[in-house]
Image (cartoon, rainbow, N blue to C red; front, side, top):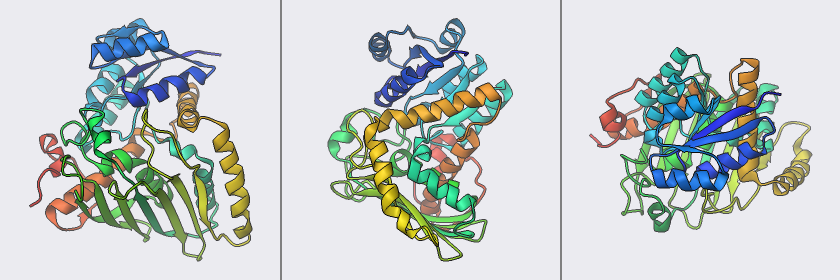
Length: 374
């Protein structure tokens, strides 16, 4: 069995989850790290007993890196990914793929030119109740999915934003709840409902005057399959309530999942309080299975370290994609769709009108035009 050498670029809080997931894989080895801060990289490398590098290309070459996991803040994904890809490593990026479409497109283009695979972390796709909804849609149990919704209401306090210098700013974080907290749910909704035709959205900062970015956003979606959708996401609801993705089919059946409950998860700062469960299920003949699934899924979720286990499953899928020369479940193009969706909400707010898809990149210096409302 081949042992894949893995590097981590960016040694902040979420990088520890990746490192622990890699350590659990029998065919993987954490072989080296890099960070924009030498002190951070040195401390991280000491903890996991791996070498640290001050430059990316020597790390990739010297340690024979097969897969590089990018864990830098969102606006700083592009350059490390480009350097690693050009040095010959496959790339897996923490969500979201980037904070702008321009960076997303350049990352996809660079990886294709280098002949390496590109993926984006969306480990909640591996949650058992999340997969169950997707399987039901693919099996036609709902008919055509015609109405999809996201409700994600949670809370971020001032201590959260002060925990890292990059949080809460356009330049360093690239956005607020849409860019940092909601990408998992946005990705799942797109996975369920398919391609978008048009979006009308609004964002606001309701009660976090000490940050620049949005803490709340809403949107109405027209999908290309004729379906419609609704998004409500917020960091402004104390103490942190839930994240739900629901799909309703043309045959009247519905399926849904509560991906997060109790309080919003903060990597490196808190655990997951409630297991993900199917909270709606009206597929004919399967209505009575809901309680059984809740019990089974909760028991399994509580038997593992979920912050690491599902990350491990996604990295495992990516390594299998390399081994079998196939695409990973969550590709760079899939990751771009999430960036395209939150960019559309920013642009719709700016221009006060619906935004048609597909979207093209605007001026990177203006973060795709989201900094000012016209």
